[in-house]
Length: 388
Image 1 (tube, one colour):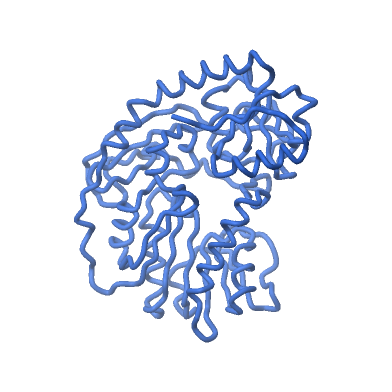
Image 2 (cartoon, rainbow, N blue to C red):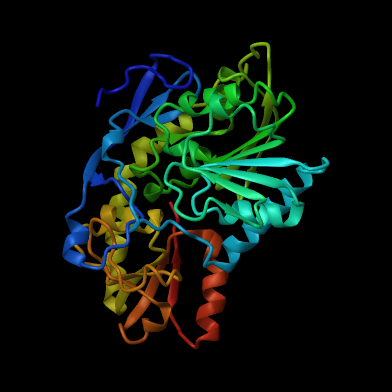
């Protein structure tokens, strides 16, 4: 692993180290049954670096060789009704883009293929899912969907794509152009294809000072400015961009551009990132003190055993001394342990038996859903949302 001394998006050497965290778990979504083994997991350093030219933020100490995914990895969020609603909104939106006769949809990083299958079901299109880690049948939906265990790129130019979707993949790529340029090459024979990139919004993290939304698996962080820089560098023209999921995520819609496009003239405002960096240690100390006070009334839990919950517990309670457990609706995670700390992951129905008096909610988008679920179950617990 060689540390980068230039921005992977724009090439600038005008870089600033924002924060450094040593030996964090490299995976946030492993499902591990043995809590002692959950503590003894591969680790790496997080050195988040800001490009003051285009506002891209990246982990300059990222080591791809550490990223070994297997069958014990589970990052599904679809057990949440709120997230299901959001997913349906995306499917409806993308479905409206497929108003051509016999459209062809490609999804890059399709995972288990569930999103692509839902999109094909409402559009009647043919689909191709690309993912080197895909496990499952080669075709589904009566042959309308084909899954390919490979990276999408120039060898697949013969697939005349109308819509290319790349959701929550680019943040896992240390050199984003290494993902985008092969897509551009593959679309030489499909010049009218629409390309969608979706990724978390860096500005939402910084504005809300969410210290647990930086983790090793995400080595690249964008705002709308830096993502447009990357698109244009790769030969795409941006035709739409927006913040979604209550501003936590963002989409960019683009098309192939034969002529090099002008880069965004608006210079990135980096004060937000630098302000965050200056405040992070103070935020961690405040939450450590707050948790000590909350424990006077009973046991504590966090709601959410995904990347946010894992990162929060590794930052605030790394030795599993102050927070009892994590709660998650995904039954595959219940009875397992938090990566890096060993906190048990439980079903919410165990709240009473564990004397839990307060729950820290990892994602504010789910607060109303959680409150309704607890009320319906007759569970009286204080809900604490993240506030910087």
